[in-house]
Image (cartoon, rainbow, N blue to C red; front, side, top):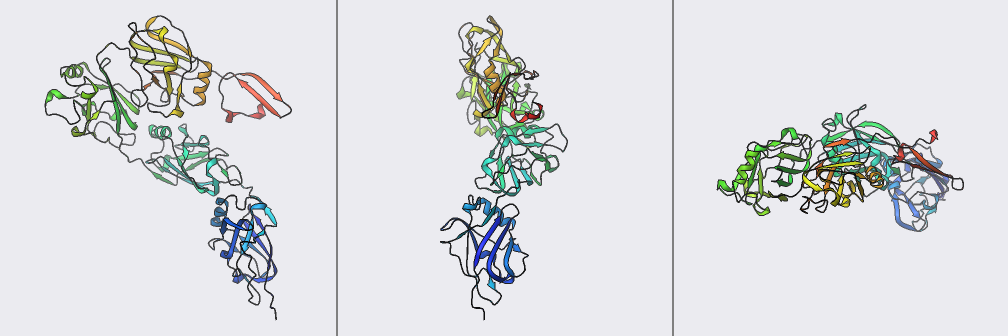
Length: 534
């Protein structure tokens, strides 16, 4: 009679085709096999990074015999890869088993291999398969993309610049993303948080991401790497498997009034639809809680919207009648302490039709900035020519062009932008030195290239200007009214796109390192380089 217990002599693992091959000293009974008795370890005597196989999905089709081939299920493969560096090389792949793993043909249990003396893999085959996107979900309400791949990926390698959203399989409405990964644990599911700018660009486009049918996602090859550093496959375009619409009501975050230019600027936390704005829903009041005295509040009656763009900022031209009515109230809008606003939810809606959160008369919102009826220079509008790198500034009164401080000028991608989407000029060259209402200057080549790298000023909607109070002075040394990020930043009035083709100016070839350095006349997109044309 057989009294010798079977012994596991060796094992192989193939991370490419998800197989685990076990070699026993004698034939074993497959029907007695229990995969959950196997533990993979990163070292022979350590369980710090280890994984116990699960019975869900991992099976074997092997007959009774000394060699058993396990087909590792998706759960086990993803879990193994998530436990990096477990099974990432031959020298991080060890195995231990309990005696309940399997029995031989007469019912004797296999000899255990303790986790303190696990055996190393005999033959290790690395993962050489690129991950593929299976599906994605888009939550516009929270600006969250959920990407599901067919295997565990290294979330820290996800490159936002290689993700695009568009509205159909064939469309000119394409939005490249610049957000950040929200996931901290490697796995097949990656949570990607769109940046503030990303969310706004999506919402501003009325033809993208209104429902699942107009929400498509594309991935450039290598948008993410798996745990073996294989680049993800290209996804030409895939429709959202689940879509959560924007149901959040917009909020008025700040406001600014300039009584010199009769301008009211309203800033919101998300883009709003300028076609829905009704100025008669705005009431100025002299205190946080509105007084019943009609001399201490005033509702706009004939002012009109001067904005023709949807976005975070709405500009309202205060009519002469409204302005005179305000001035007739000596204790209204004469300082920050007497400048509050109340609005109804009928003032404006966001791009998906959600009405504004009302500001009640009992909880008025104080102005963030007010320009009194004084002779302080104020920028009316500006033009930017990205072809020539020229900025033309138009002021409401004559200014001293030679007093300009170029470093006080900041170009940014929206009316409210974070530091990543802002660029402060380092210099410039005046093209007009006289006293005038119009000042023109050239942006330096270094600044122009840096602006292009940051993808600022690529269109009218992504060209906004902030100016410090030290930007320029008038004839009487009165400083300019500052344009402040998130409060009264100004969109470009006239924008000229860059149509000048880049030129190769020089090259350096290093045969020692095998590198070719190309120097161009302006910033170029490295990803667009086609080496076969050289």
